[in-house]
Length: 577
Length: 33
Image 1 (cartoon, rainbow over the protein chains, first blue to last red):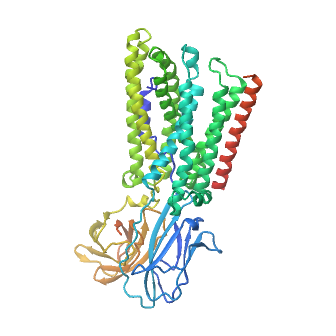
Image 2 (cartoon, chains in turn cyan, purple):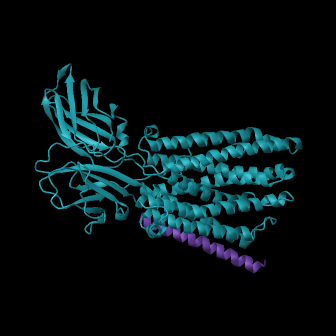
Image 3 (cartoon, chains in turn red, green):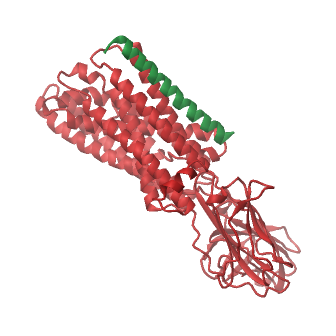
């Protein structure tokens, strides 16, 4: 392989890093609702207003308001409030009857990710008990397999095209001069194929994503194209297509003017290569601005980290593909000589790339994950672990190349009969390495489709118990007290009964002051706080429809006993729909 | 291919690269601004 005498640090690097090429994000979240979630109104509201932390696009938003029988209560489309660009308004039927209503909403974040939620409100004064609504399935992502594959193809083709260009124009350039009868035509053709796939894949992906967000058919291109530039995500991918097309043009010129038989490059060759290099840098800047990186503080660090991660990944992946192409294009007679020119040169680039992947991946992970435990507790973290696993496997194959293939290639200079087997081994290992890195890029495509863990998850590590889904009756102990946490029926968007039974030494703790705070752990939402009342000796209860969406909730009980210091009991509850 | 043609093509490539950089920087400015 590829890493000349540097296997150990390279392997060590792989163990830790190579995390997150795309970035992570803050998704749009609700900061205010009118009517308030779970609130009871004395008069029917004329409209439902949802205020987000950013200006979400009304044409991509859904706000449904239904009664207990799933009858629609809205009378018009979702519009932006003239008073506040961050607020979406949907008009309601006049004179809504008394009763409970479910509001289900879906919006597209600035970074292109759908976010969804639900809450209830009631029209009084006597709405009756809150019913059990059927909540639409609420997930953290609306990514479909089609979108994921399209995103993967976009990343792969763009990264491989850029990496192949640098292999052709830089790494493999001396091959023609040093090994007689060789040509770089195959690498040029491979670059052309990757560039063509990228140029097609980008608009196809944009079409699929816009169709998904606006709930239209992917074949309704006439309606979708005007929507391409409506969201920041769409604008970024249109700009990425423009930048990539410009890169392809500049790179084609650079290859056209390149004369590899001359050792020293002319001014024209340098100018053209510089132009293509600048265009490539511009292309790889776009995903960060379209994704999580630009939404994650500190953006001055997360955007450059994302860019460097993509640059180093492109050089590595494109270089591996380029070596495979060269292996195949070089005739059996020149294969060993050709590889002995290209492989060591690529090793230097790959080594620096892996170090950069290490540093930027670790940096991005630190920025995006609130705790180490979120690596295995959240789907975002698990995707990172899978990506690391794939890259570790790729690095192990690299070690095989380093320890077995390279010495054989060197020995083949003295004993040519060893060359063929060394080249075969090199091809197998690099093929495997390429597949694994391509798999890691898929994991990256998944990553960039998922919501990064909420900062509130940082507290979840101190939870005394994790409970749910389903009815909860869990006992925890802290500071000599015994707490029994009861949640019934523990369903989202339903009225649940929350109770805390406190005993000390087997006796109920009377007269304590207990407040319960609800914190959504899977996405950013405003907290809700309720005062619990003592309904029986040592039993503090409150009915509430506070679990307004499916997912993990931090139930934080602040207990102030009549005597003794106050204490906090935190339980992580999984509420099902 | 004459040197003049090659040099002109190279300048075009440089200009194209600069244009791509302007597009990306404008996008960055819009997004982060």
